[in-house]
Image (cartoon, rainbow, N blue to C red; front, top):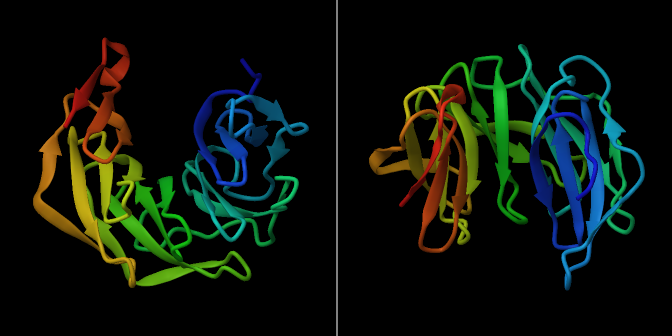
Length: 231
């Protein structure tokens, strides 16, 4: 067991052995190194605090293989902040400007997704029911709007995850109680709704876990007994 900040909301890790946790209420990022053989975690210093407007509620976090760590801030209006990773030590340093305002309309940017070394970034927009698409500049870490800046999701989308192949994306829609599913064009980053575009997912799904053959959705259910749905 390791001490984190307050209300840890999301985590990400890379193949170098570093893991990062977004702590929503304490407005910081916990940094760890993990042993690839045993899984043992070692804390690397104190949590890193974000600064500047739109950086007080870190909800989601994702890392690009080129060494950029992106933190999605869920307050209204929110932003996407980014940090440069020291790929030897795992330390991260916030980049100025502190964040990118959401493209495609809306203010409540929620959770991000990146697949490996592909230079495309995706983020759910809670208030507009969209998935925003961005291009990643691997030299500077900067994000710019994709030629197709967003696609439609369900109501109040939360978590977004890739299939292990990178060929599909799934989004948990809290408000419409379903999962949106898309195919991914690797070269362009464009995502296209599958048929059917959504599948039912109990009450208020907020989290997803996907393997090569199966997907599981966690249902929040507003404080009552939730559930896990398998596909």
